[in-house]
Length: 284
Image (cartoon, rainbow, N blue to C red; front, side, top):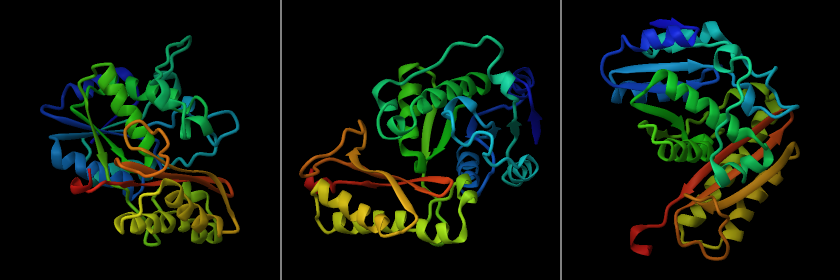
């Protein structure tokens, strides 16, 4: 496994990878969710290229950039274990040279839901992903469905800028309790972790209603809200039921595929989760 710490080193090492390359961008603190992306990439590409970079521009002032979990030695061991060919671990000054002023924005998709709660977040995401695609020139990029809005933003980015990278969304990996795996789960106390399982329970409750024919948007949202609100430590940021493609909030009867998503704070951790509600073909 090759390790590159500068753009030049990464480009030289990338040139040695013959065939298709699957990129798995991460901020480190790798867990089973990241490993699942690497395995998917290796199954579909000749090589896997992983990046480990805690991107400062996607953190708002007062967020957890300084405290974000970092575990380079363990991360590199995980990459090697999963058959990664090349790991790019740049310092901040490599990705944002002195005087850098160019940013990338993906319009309205970047300003709602997570974008409204974390202004500027998706501009930071879009900018760093554009840079990573430019440096690593992958065939495909692999991203988790847990960050559903991010996945939409990156797909739009790749399409609009003609980047020639296929953006692949991969299933959410969950802990035994149902809690979606996240590096930020490390912030949770035992009590917070137990209560945080309510996110997936609420989503499952609404999914069950959906599969039973429930189509009222307000009722579906309320089912999720009530399950989470019953947890004393939960501070709900939002519960959304939105069009899967545009993220425009659904109203009344839902007739198209929709994204049911939540953001909730437990202590120092801000957790997100989601479920896609698909309209059966016979009901379209």
